[in-house]
Image 1: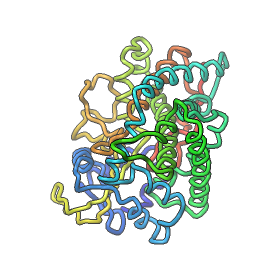
Image 2 (image 1 turned 180 degrees about the vertical axis):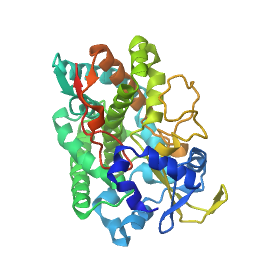
Image 3 (image 1 turned 45 degrees about the horizontal axis):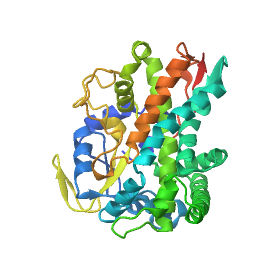
Image 4 (image 1 turned 135 degrees about the vertical axis):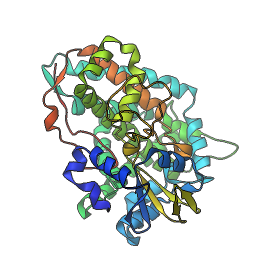
Amino acid sequence: MNFATFSSPAFFTDPYPMYEKLREAGPLLPVGPNALVTGRFEIIDALLRDRRMGKTYLQSVRARYGDAATEQPVFQALSRTFLMMNPPAHTKLRTLLMKAFNARQVEKQKEIVEATSRELLDRIGSAAQFDLVSEYALPLPVEIICRLLDIPSSDGTELGVAASRLVAAFDLAPLDDAALADANEAALTLERYFRTVIEQRRARPGDDIVSSLVHVEDEGTTLSDDEIVSNVILLFIAGHETTSNMIGNAMVALFRHPARLEALRREPAIIAKAVAECMRFDSSVQMVVRTALEEVVIQGVTLKPGTIVFMLTGAANRDPAVFSHPDQLDFDRGPNVPSLAFGGGIHYCLGARLALLEMEVALRDLLARFPQMQPEDLDQLTWHRRNNLRGVQSLRIHI
């Protein structure tokens, strides 16, 4: 097995048959020089919580692209985010970021999410048909994060395009030269834009996340401009790509399970359970990466220091060793069913609360506004050609 295994058209359309074969083939399989891959829940869950496993992002870049690639702008930009750091640097940044998401910011989130959803659905109006992805799922998180950052929503489209090009650099399969050049230009575009925003907030603070990051302080520790820029880019990416794709994935899953869709229509109060199960069933985030910082032995496999492990969380969330009938969408699994949709350990998703809120509001509002909506053709969907982030390019809907 090698990186190319995760780049076939069949994989992008439906990765789950390959995930099943991968789980059955063994606990950890070689996928490249000093690199392993796993799709088993128990292993991924344990390694995400093991402090001997950490982030060596640039090392994983070397494994895929070679030594020279680590100087590329996109990889440098991503390496400066707290997502790619280990303690104590990670601890410092995460503490400051969590402090910036103060009570007022959390309070604003629900108001902003609900208002944005209503406005987008009003734009769709009574059209006989629409594209759920381009007209709702994609602009919803973009406009929400723009409002939370207090930047013009008119800038969101261009920034969203840049974010989509940059996030391709997270893929397990190496990008070709053209895609890598696009990702580099996207990183530079986002850096230039948010550096200007930071300068404006230093001069004129507001009641937004960027202003909070500029002025946050913890026992005399503050964030540098470089740290703010990189992590605002991360917030924008996380608030854009993951949620928009997850809304599309959830609606595809519901349309393919009409009994579950009808149950949700009849009983909107089960929305939280439905969202949790949709995220387990077909998460937009399909993979995370960790490196052994010390020797780790797990299920008879020794991970020497420097060993990179590509953890297929999408495969783990369908592991039959953990989930009964994992390929079925089941809202009755109970409140304590595990899921790796938001990762785990010290790198558990900082924006999980906002993402769940967006998902719940999005599905609730769609079903309330268009209770009889149906997809055009579920057998002709085009999926993004990515192996770390799963989602459909379009989902045509009849009202």
